[in-house]
Image 1: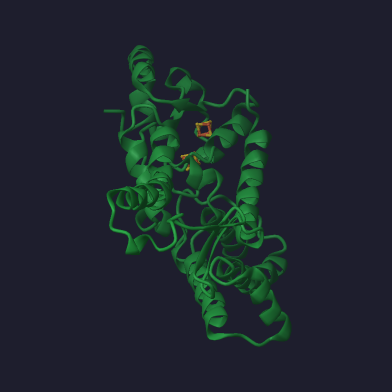
Image 2: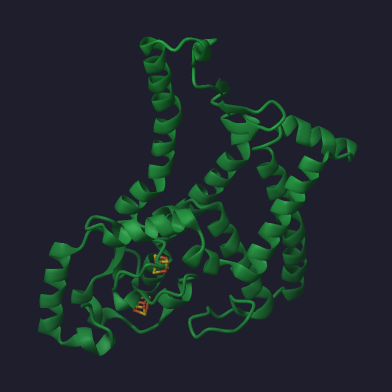
Amino acid sequence: MVSSRFLLTSRRITQFSFILLVVLMPVLNIFRYDTATHELIVFGKIWSLGLKAGFYADPSLSVSLHVALHFLLNAILPWIIILSIFPLAGFIGGRFFCGWFCPEGALFEWADYLTLKVAGRRSLYKRRPSDPETSGDNRIAFIVLAALSAVVIPLLAGVALTGYFVAPKTVWTQIAAWRFTFGVKAGIIGVAVYILIGSIFVRHVFCKFVCAPGLMQMLLGWISPLSLRIKMDTARIAECTDCRNCEKACFMNVLPRKNKRDISCVGCGACVAACHKELGEGKGLFRYQMGEAREKHRERNAADNTGLYDLRHNTPEP
Ligand code: SF4
Ligand code: SF4
């Protein structure tokens, strides 16, 4: 049985590791495009179509086949593979990537946390019934931390992401000399402004309505009969204390007790951990589950037998 601490800690580790990977990919030449040399670098090698020199001067069938084959293998196929990652991830894991790996999602959670500590609510705009309570202790310290985060994180993100288009060594040399080319300046400032606006004003609205990889996962996760989701054990619904900690833990404003497949759920497991904490480790009412067909049938029977399903959920499963 997965404990609440294990769930929370492992999610922070995967989020941090993925951020580290995004930062290190251009530095280690794992993946970057060099705008100075117009070269795509993949795992330390310059990615090319691998065409024979002077192929354009030879119109023979064998050379035409050579061009077609190399174009298919080295240009079309890699793109098909890259573009299929998120739909495939969605078909299997729903929005699991968003909750466990996405650097922007992690940043928005950090912004939620600081807003909660400073303003007593998650959102900048209004307090929601599902906002967690906070003591209001150390408010000044959190205001300073929020101000620092608003400056440092966007700038670091700007430097890291500019490295995908300008060699990271060049970027850091220019920072050290405090003399910037237009491209480096535009890259750092552009990304920093985007991150700043996104993390202050937009946050999870971006995840719900704008992010293309998120929408692909959402759609494929929704139609997939197998995808990973959070399920409530409705046979044990009478054990629910109505503490609402599961709702307060959900930064996507999902109501997990509705037990419906919600397209906003990113499978973060915060509600799973919250219920374990309330009812005792291993006794929480939520769990991860792949697919739902058999389970649905069992739950309907359980709900019919107890009569509690409709009592605790005013929107039962269709
Ligand atoms: S419903 Fe649970 S798993 Fe889904 S986003 Fe909310 S807290 Fe995370
Ligand atoms: S955390 Fe568990 S016990 Fe509390 S309201 Fe949610 S389902 Fe019920």
